[in-house]
Length: 295
Length: 295
Image (cartoon, rainbow over all chains, first blue to last red; front, side, top):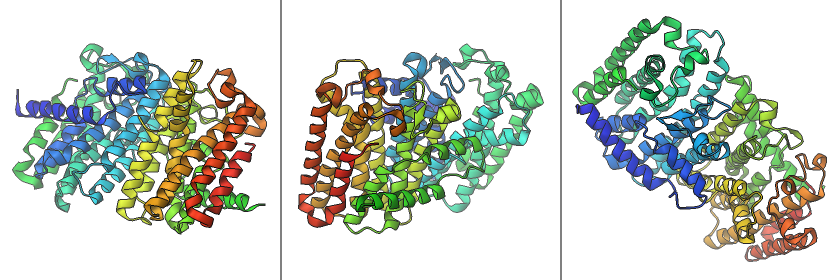
């Protein structure tokens, strides 16, 4: 196992441990709701956003104890968005991370409420994180709220994505949708690591530039995987973008050209890290890892 | 217009003004999402929860400037819960506050996202409220999150309410559902006024006891109105509880006995205010107003 693989495995163990502590027990009423929350949170996510919190935070010397709850909160928001995006009224997906989606395994009402509760719990986690000073907690709550909501966050991106299906959109809008739907939370994850570690202004700016490219890279490779992989490898329904006539990088430029663009973005992400020198080694490895990922 | 009516009218004007400042403009993309948010928020709500924030805060000398954003945030959470509760997968309601519900006027996906975004915006509002010191903001975020989520808040109450439909539940469970679904946010609204005004511990305890009774009173009168009023007066579909075979105070005890219980609760709420003396006059009037309300 390479450095980046063992780092990612460590992040999964750390994040899942903290999530287990923070989420209500499945034996507590309302049991069905808590079972649904745990079903979706522990469905085998790669914990990519928590990995960014840890990788950036450690780059600037933050202890894991200070990073743990923020990593868990970001993953709660991510899972909330997956549960709601999969609903019949949205992307109507039966499969996620290789398991039944929340509304398939439970029911629609429970899935809506499980997503709602995960959003609440994410903010509660940040505001009650005693490892961090009050001012930092407030900045994290504000940053996560902005990355989650509208007009600058994930919810706005999902709305635009739904509206764009089947429409002949321009690339500039495609980038905007990517940036809101996927990029905002990824950028927040990276930025939160720098904030918690009290990185300098110049360091934080380098991380911001890196995080934006990483978010875009993640989305382009996601689009590519939707075409190149089977549902089994992917753990979710493959070929959905084409079926929904979604505008994506490969649909716009063709598969090979889109791979070239992803490689450019990977290189640009590496350049953004230049000012940080050798201590940003793991962040460089992560961007290569995303470029090479198969699912 | 009596004292309490003119106070409530003032609260509507103050709260709606701040909400208009805080919500994204409908002209901003994604327009449909922002239109949906504004449609539901400005559908003519009575702003009862903001009224509690103001009434309690003013009782202990807080300026309106310190209360405004919290009042708006509480109303955002309330509206988010109405939008999601009205969805086809939940209570499946077409009418709310005399207007089409959000998913009827727009569509289900937009309604789900509008609710999600309102939750996010509520927490963003509290954490960015520069009228309040950081420690107070954090306490408000934590308190609102707990009152909203699970296992101690509104989302848990909605889950239990859905599960209880048609089941032969005991009264103790009925009280628990009321207390989570309606009581938790009402209690938070009242408590936040005391927190912002830096009330003493004894004062805050009196408000907590008052708020719990007020939440229960509000729910019992809601149940009574569902039976006694037409949909037109009510601004939402009447007779829904009986149709869904929901356990309510009137279904359990009969209409007249339930009115008697509501009157007992009103009296108990008044007793809870005893230690506060004459300055709690408006709070007393509010409890009588709720008891007498027709919609």
